[in-house]
Image 1: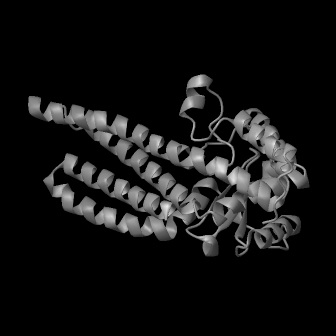
Image 2 (image 1 turned 135 degrees about the vertical axis):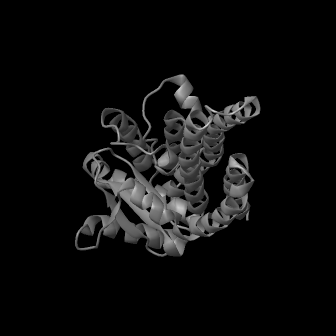
Image 3 (image 1 turned 180 degrees about the horizontal axis):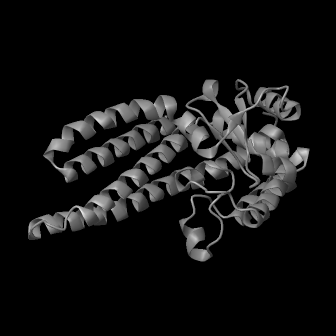
Length: 289
């Protein structure tokens, strides 16, 4: 129920942003942007997973192409009590993984070529269990829609800032004020969208870590994988990372930055995630999925 309310809220935010942009551009744009908001609401629900896969370059693989990967996903999906999701590989040396899809029946797990080279089979199993936990918890729709919203806001903000800078040179004082307001909105709205993603993503990562450790019955495997991934992501940055989809990955692909960037990250601190998992391991919390 909570995730359903989040989804409705995010769809409402997307509508408000699009309609607000239309109203800012002028009365003639309002109806068109209202219709666009309705179309994107439907599209975000049914097709946002396809958009995310396309943005990440993920390609679906068959059991014949990746037998070991499919075997682990099949076994863990059975333990989690969900249908086996589609399996994709991202042709990227950066080590990372994510899940997407609007519900468990339409789930997708994607892993990069880099993560399969970096991790042992046990560690990769822990990562896959984490991603399947996202699918089982039904929080991937919320996160995927959040990514779609962030992408839409980014594109519209770029268009609006371009119009504000280059479209207002011959306007009077009132028009210049409107252009200035448009430029301010173009700068502020992507930041607000990022804050929404932060609030959603940080909480869900902790929950998926715990649930994934229980599905795999091996908290230490995921803890060890996260430690390697944190270092590997720094040493091998993602090629052309997409900020809008960063929150979907198990490790933030937007590496670097220091304390301010850590505070603004859509992911919780890696050290705290590892500490919680190893505390589970020490306490012997071995609960079958």
